Amino acid sequence: MSTPDAPGPRERLLEAAQSLTYSHGMGVGVDALLTAANVARRSLYEHFGGKDGLLTEVLKRATEADESRYAATMDGAGEDPRDRLLAVFDDLEGVIAEPGFRGCRYLAADLALTDPHHPGHAVTRAYRERVSGRLEHELRRLEHPRPALAADQLLLLIDGALAAGATRLKTEPAAAARELAELVIDTRSRP
Image (tube, rainbow, N blue to C red; front, side, top):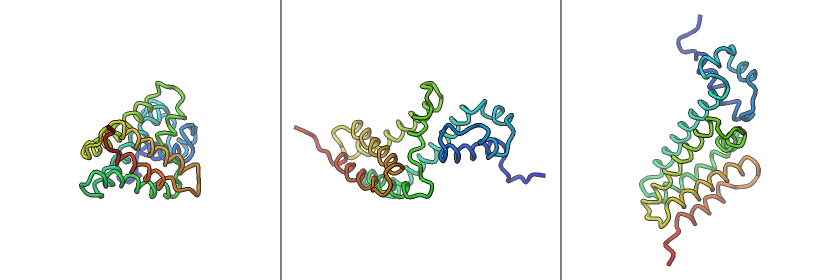
């Protein structure tokens, strides 16, 4: 008899896929996912229509958590837009230092999902647009002369710090990205 608090097959599949796709990449096999979730193949198709649907749901779920982290980080920095933006880069240091850190889940997904029409790409694009919009909002509050471009530059620094954090051990990509972010944030109008 199962307990009411025990996760069902759908949740177990999501948890297994979230963990395995981050630690082993999007190419992790269906059999490994089913084994980790302790579910039958039928559950995968009933709940997600197949592996592509599961991967897309995992990405959606991850974006919700990561966007909440951005909001909490920025809100924790107070009301000053400059402080709020730099708090994102301060938080990157902790993200990179987390046990099992393997880089940016979204960049890895975009590189691994070779079909340009895979629904996961729509999720990662929308996520980046929302993060960029959040950054742009703060830059507008600072009256930055080119807030949309600056938001793209900051997002590039975030992606780069996360990639370097996974591939260039014993470096300080978050600190380097923060210094460059200050230059982007503090840009004033050119004559």
